[in-house]
Image (cartoon, rainbow, N blue to C red; front, side, top):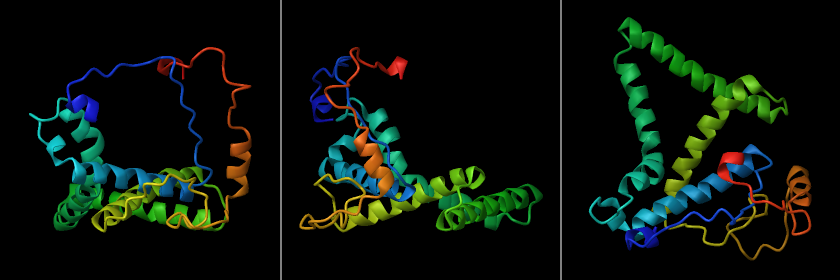
Length: 196
């Protein structure tokens, strides 16, 4: 971002390859998202000039990709309030019932997860609600100045305390770590975005 705001060229390098290990559980993904979203809030706090279109040459991309995701929970709340206020109208009564059913199904997905029962039918709703709840938690972190600057794996014990000397990484994360590509088995040709 600093390079772009200085109006210096940013180029795509097809030979640059990054490996990303997916989270082994919804809880680990929530931790990762919380850290990432708090970082987005930190960008706004430390660089408020990036919110000004005449100071930021990629203003639209910054607002749409970084800032709008921080306001999505407010928009969801506005939708819910409008459904309640307009509940006496047939269309909004139907929409309100569907709205409530969506969140009820997310709660059902949470219960299934707690019981160890995988549910493809309810998993998407649970992920949507979890990620939005994670955004609220991240904004609370940002409001208190709790930005995690030390990157750790989400499965590490006590991610807020660097002094923690032990880890509680679950078995799925350990298996995923064991299969992380090394220099010996990297692909001989770069994987470009169009090929992934």
